[in-house]
Length: 400
Image (cartoon, rainbow, N blue to C red):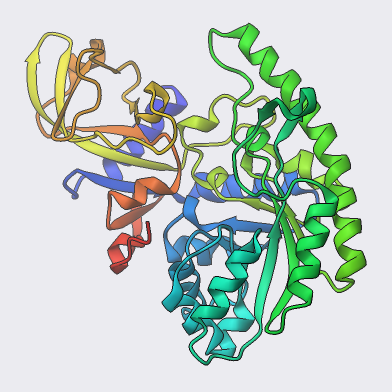
């Protein structure tokens, strides 16, 4: 029996009393992935990206491990909720226009001490000030550096369109703007190199493109390491007490951790290891988060139909944004139908061994987005469900 077939047998036994659709997290795989992130970080703390987990119980589990410290959140409302729930170090990774949230933050000393917000424009400071509603607490601020690689005098750009702050001078000037402004304090710098951390460099059947990606990423890592160090020096000249410099992502943990200027690493998807992380030479993990859909039809030889399953991931639309049938091995989508909202036909010889009511296990393309489809996660140890915990959705929160 292959390892995957063994996992399928365990998952089927563990959830035999549960009706699909359902979602699970294999805790042995989850913990092994967490240990690997810590190993790759080389002694620097890993800040957990909550958008890739979206479950408080699992955030608590991973933060209880040595080597993890703090949360990187994705909305201000989520940040405040997590802080009220007892998480005392929450870095909001994206700018916000949540006026009521800023009023709450500026009016509560506990929240103001626990949450750091992201800025890259003076207009964002204006919005925060206009939203204070009388709150006088100092707002902790992190500055985001644009990590994109610019070539041919800026005519070619590789990387996400995030912060407008690209050069050391631009980031230092933003730091001065914050320092001059009462009610704010610069405490950190963040730089997410998505074109390295979030792009696989070993694409099946595409060797030339894979090599081109590796060459691009090598150049991007060299350029960013030099520029990030210069940015940190420039900002420390303005803010000597800078608390942290955050960088990285699941796909670039060890590379970013090697930079002296970086003090902590961000990662989250590496805990669940969704399908988009199958194409990396820098690491491999064990898929820990899966969802199951029930077989509801047998239209013919080599075909079964499961309920639902059309859970596309965010990003540029394409086949790689669909979940992938994972267990039993050998199933594939009908190219004329793909993953459907209410039903999904699956093709392949394993279909002939599936009965009505059997479970087909899928991997989502991205990590935490799976939790927007399910209100609970069944946690599996060995061949038993040992706990069932709510996702953000299960606690009544859909922050985005």
